Image (cartoon, rainbow, N blue to C red; front, top):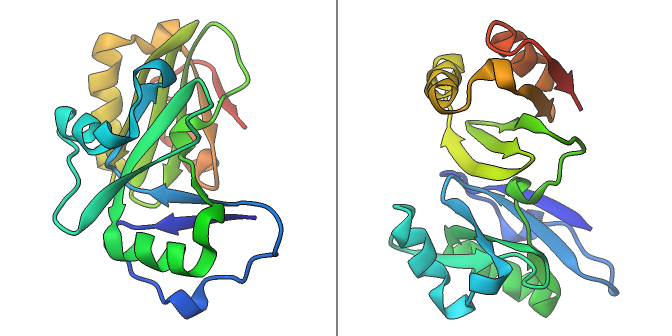
Length: 187
């Protein structure tokens, strides 16, 4: 079972969380701008909050750091509300695991930009054959997305990259960015 939680100022009731089957793990995907990727070789759980702080993404008061599977090549480190984490642990115990859209492995080769919009967040990965950039950007509206893409274009010229968009807002994102990227693929 997989559950996606938007933690950007929203609250939820423990009673409204779905019941889980007895067997198997439970994957939670906190959607938060305070998310980063760390190579498995450099990751240590006791330093998770420090990694976020070093990137200017330190957990706020009342938040703590959680991370994805440490057996994978890349570990996603995220800041989430401690009360939310306590409620999840109380309901699901040790079967709980975390993931992030930044861990998604797009299916392409060569130079590409991958984007996925989740509410007011824009998940972005840039590949020049290998991963060059992985960011979560606050994008409250289309103007925020366009501002970010203009800044991104200064580093990674759109003429050199194809754009891959994903998620429910993929078609709208494709339409918004068609003036920047010549080749856009909706996945």
